[in-house]
Image (cartoon, rainbow, N blue to C red; front, top):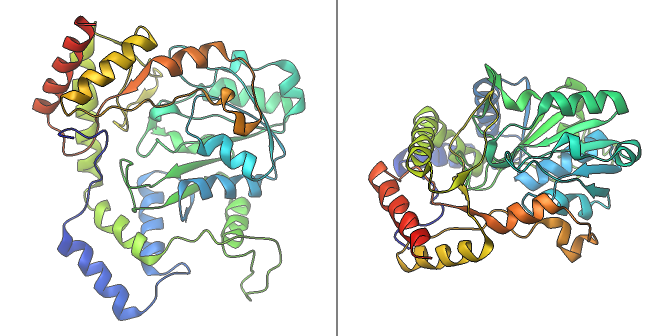
Length: 360
């Protein structure tokens, strides 16, 4: 494909090699080594949070969050990646879906049923494509019903809410640092906690539940990030402002080109897009399939994020009707978005999209 849907950004090889040579000299490969500790500190400062813990991937970040919060019954969204409900099902945590807002694509607080709020002990919203949820309404519901709030913030590296970080909201939030994300460690993730005690509990949990004397005082797992992955993060971190700014510019340019051509996700008025994804909403599923085929024939890869709506996936043993999510998931298509794209590339992609729609 001339224009893949994503293209991982790699640092300069000599810069990454310098970090790798240091790892070889130390012969220290894992167990919270110097690279991981350094990256963890840099990310906490950059993302304006107090308690950030690096883990091996974004799905493990969710697992750790659930375990620390001690949740059993969860309300979540069907319009998300498989990792969100899949991680719940894998831990045998019971969950119920609630429908989304048709404009923001996020979990809609007003759609959550009263009986589900009484049943649940946690809400697991997703900031879809980095777009902030209605965090105030969700927090009010949580306080009223004594619920924990865990945000799946996999797409939210660098996302702002008002004048601060979106990652500050909820009892905890999880990040993905996968190779396809805006900032990555090849594989990696992070959990951001509001409470220091939860952060300390998580540090123990990701190392087999062992205390400082290496005695397993609780059931744990191995979710540690390796030094090699930490080195990738450190090498890329030197360019993080440049990466974020360029992707934000691409996102704004895309939006300007597509006004009146397709419907766009409505962004929270207090949020600032980070350029993580470029979703568009087409008029029908038939049109989407036609457009996707036409663009593919021209070397432009697109992807149906997120399809199908996960309330219809039989492996989760749910078959509830979510009319809005069912509809949106059938019509959303993501266009190429990555650091190497230029405005000229966006012009070509948008022109091809407009012609494909016109010729349908």
